[in-house]
Each structure stands twice: as structure tokens, then as C-alpha cells.
Image (tube, rainbow, N blue to C red; front, side, top):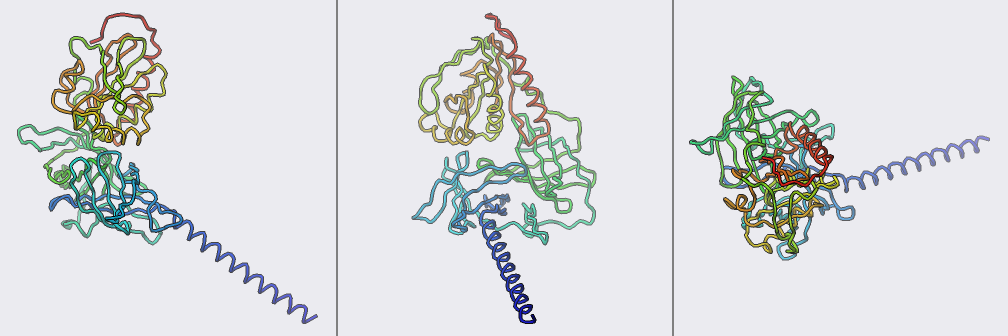
Length: 439
């Protein structure tokens, strides 16, 4: 009886030990497996010049079988994530090449922590480095886009209030300063400052960054534009600072809190010519096959003036892709490029078309130069890529919209809702053939 009890106890102890070992082994391997594929955030820096270091963040995902190799890479700008395409490994230089949807690339050395940002169009290269984003005791990644230790930040015991909206004066040209609207807010999840700056040609897209005392640092990076805004918050609530773009451009700006200030109405900046009807023959950007655009044939027509080099055009194209679901709505994108040669422009346009999977025709319209748009289309006072023209079924010009303020701005949702409603009303109208054109 005693021997039997002892045997049973040894069995239970051994069995419990075995179960414990199995659980530990399972948890270890589960952690090991998930750690390989779990996305990782990096703090990155591109050294554009001695005056401008662009700080931004990227997110990576590792290959299951080769944890040291990146299988996915995206640029993070607040709420925005721009996915890059892996195009291959350069064996000679030992670099991995990641391509933006625009005319630029990121070349990463072995280990993925250093490399170069390359502007494909000009061949310019700028040093790149990255390190893992800080992880706190609660194992949550912090949105430390701008590293405190690398910034020259004056100490201040009192933090002044920051308004969520400003009327800005951008002083790139002292004789003709540019008016803009600044919108800022704190993201409750990351405690990161976000927002955008709106101009008549479009917005500066997704800005994100950090506040240290009365200094606010914001940036955005999309492969074409690398913007940094160093903002000082004054005691009276006004702001001043410096805007840097790429390697050469910088401008001063200042602003005052303003909840009511507005830009010019985008529907009244660019105006129609005497005859606003459209009859165009242009080549499809890739095949060269001639496509005819003719308004007034019973379908609502939306004509987009864009360029593959234009991030605001990308934002507008994403929205137009949504609109393309409407039957009897014809959308045509007219691509004005860096070159006047269609064949040399194919790869740049194709990057954007493939990245967005655009379902509507993209036609090559020539070189993006002064007067090019007005020579092709019946409009005056063209100021911005993108711009769109909307025609009703009878060929009447309903509206011209200059510029595009995208999803990083507060008015974007209202704008898209109104545009959907407008398109639906135009599609519901009966088609009566007429030669009249709305002015």
C-alpha cells in the first residue's frame, strides 16, 4: 500500500514536470515564431544637408525563415503608411533596393540599418541610418520620431498653449509671402503631434512629430518630399519657425491662432475659356494607343490634371479610384511629366498606376511646364497639379477644382461626401443632346 502510493506520487510529479516542460517549450517557440513576423518600428534619419536632417519612422516585417531579412517595409507619417516595393538584391554592392511609388529608392546595406536615399530622376543620394524605436517598460513602442538628444532644445519651465488652427504666412518670397492654414492636434493613442498645412495648391500631407517644451518638430516623407517644420510656440500663442525641404530649400514662417481664416475658394481660382467643351486625342501612357476624350455624349466626365511626381495627385487618385465605381462616369487622368517624351515617362507613371491599381485610363499629356495645361485644355489661370474638370452628360462644364487637400486635413471627409453627392445628382439627370455649355 505504501509502495503503491509512492509510485503514484512519483508518477504525478513526473507527469506534472513533463506538462510544465511542454508548456514552456510551446510558449518559447510561439514567441520565437511570432517575434520573427511581428512588425517592428524604426527611427530613421536622412542627412539632406548640414542644415537639414529629416527624421521619420518606418515599419518593417521580417521573413519567417530568415529573420534578419526584411520582407515588408513601409514609411510612417502619423496615420499614413506608404508601402515600398522590394525590387531585388544588388550582389556587387551588397544592398537591398526598395522602391517608392514615386521616382525614388531606398538602398539598404546588410543589416538594414544604414544606406542611401536615392532620387532616381537626378541620381542624387543622401545618407540614411535607422535604429529600433524605443520600447518602454510596458513593451509599447513610443512615437519618438524626433530624438530629443540630437536636437538643440532650450529649456523652459512653462509650456505655452498650442492652438489647433493657425493662419500662417510662409516667407519664401519676402515680396509675395504665401498664406496658409496650419492644423495641429495630439493623437491620443501615441501622444504624437499630427496635422497638416494647407495652401491653395494642396496640403503638405501627413505631418507628425514631437513637442519638447515650447518647441514643436513635425515632418513628413513620401519619397518625393522630405519636409521638416521646426516650430517655436510663443507666450502669446503665436508661432514662428523654419520650414526645410530636401537639401536646398528653406523658408521662415509665422502664424497666429485663427479659427475662421480661409484660403481662396478652389472652385473659383482656375476659370474656363470661351469654349469649355473637350475634344482631345491623347496616347495611353504605356501603349501609345490614341484615346479620344469627348464630352457631351451622355456620360458624366471627370478629367484629372496630374503628374506621377505629385504626392497630392496620388491622394486625389485614391479618391478618384473610389469614384470610378459609378457606372456612366468616365474618368481620364492626363499625366504631365518631367519629360516631353512618352516612352521615357512610362516607368514613372507605371509605378503610380500599379501602386494604386488605377482602373481608369491614364493618358500622356506632355511635359509639366508653364503654359502646357492651358495649351491643351480650355482653362485659364491654372495654378496647381492636381486640378480637375467635371462635365455633365450634355458636355456642360460643372466645375473646375484647383489643388487638392487630402485625407490629412480636417475638411477632407466633408469634401468627399459632397463630391459623391454631386456625382450622383449628375448621373441621375436625363441626357438631352444640346450644344450649350455651362460657364
